[in-house]
Length: 208
Image 1 (tube, one colour):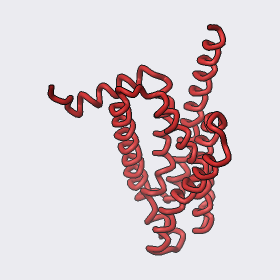
Image 2: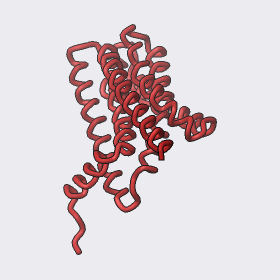
Image 3: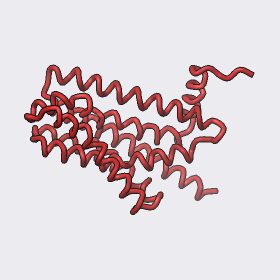
Image 4: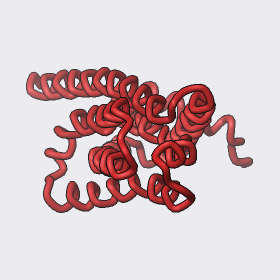
């Protein structure tokens, strides 16, 4: 029997995720990465604005990843799985919201500290990934993961392109701050929806 073509697999994954809130909410948390990925799209002009060269571009690109790595280690080591789920919403909001500090037009050290802090908060992705894995049916897990990976790559790539284009007309620090502000608002909406759905699910289990 021939294997389904990729468009068919993507459609299966989309139907699966959209029909299951337990999959949809972790996916939406994952897509929030597009907002705090914006600094990668303006790393070169940002480094130029703060008086740095090629080395500054490199450390700007590495700062968020360093924060995420350290945050993931701390979250996995010191927080139990239920705690990770509880803090997922606040951390997602903070990962985007801290970028609003770029409105202050910080120097290179300030930029790096903000990006590291954003990365630390972005460690919530560890909990989002675990929740997605747990909710995905084993028989359709590959389709669900395929959709999630494609959506994440598309959203991050689009955000970096838009940020880079915006930085041609506005200060890169301001572009990052706007992305952070918008991302924080979206993250609050996602976190509120996630919390409401969890409360409703818990209430349903108690009534059985």
